[in-house]
Each structure stands twice: as structure tokens, then as C-alpha cells.
Figure (tube, rainbow, N blue to C red):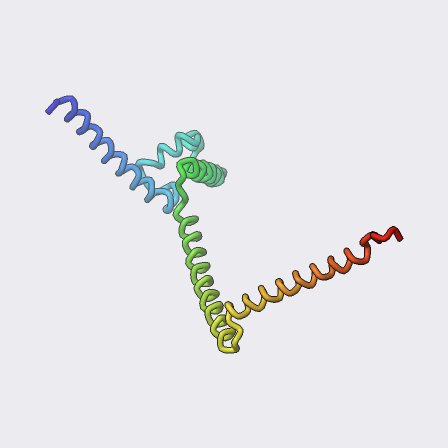
Length: 161
């Protein structure tokens, strides 16, 4: 086997493992607040200029919270570009879906019950549909008769009158 392939593949797997650990650490860091993880907090402070502000400064916490908000807004925008959805949004949509699914089930049960009631009263869907079709045909025939009657009234006199 080619040693270059093995070297490449080995480094790739090591980088993937390191990347996976970083993703796991980042996933732990976000919900706990941005102070708590040693690997990311200094990086965050430097990226957002918080390393230039004294931690005992009265505005430090305010500036920190603004940086957190900017970070999260950008992070969610980045996830959106990737086609990913934040877990909270996914959970909310899942809950909404489950509620709607339950509501649809209840409505289907209601429709089934109403159809059974109609059939018991001799007004099943097929019967109601047939009666409706007969009514439409009858009205169509009556309309044709009406048009014939108008045609007779406005018909020019053939005898020249």
C-alpha cells in the first residue's frame, strides 16, 4: 500500500478526531454560557476584543453580553447557510408537528363518525352525491327548456309579419 496514502489518511482521521472533539466542546460551551470552557473563552475574548477590556471594568459584563448576542446571531445565520436548524427551533417544530398530527387524527375520526351518522340516516355520501347529480341534471334540463322558450318568443315571423 502507498505510504503517502496511509500518511494522508492517518492525518485526515486525526484531524477529524480533533475536529469532532472541538465540536463537542463547542456544543458544551454554548448552552453553559461563554465563560465556562477554557479552550474557547480566550479565543472568544480575543475575537470580540474583550481581551482589551479589564474584567473588573463596570461595562465588561455589558460588552460581554453584546458580544454573546452578536456571536449567537452570526452562528444561527451560519447554521442557516448550511441548511441546519438550531435544536430549540427543531424541538419547537417537532412539538407543533405532533400537535397538528393529533389534531388531524381527531378530525379524521370526527369525519368518519359523521359519515357513519349520514349512512345511518340514509344519507350516505354516495346517496347525497347521486341526489346532487340528479339535481344538477334537472336544473340543466329546465335551463334548456327556458332557452327554447326564449327562442320561440324572439323567433322572427317566417310569414313576413
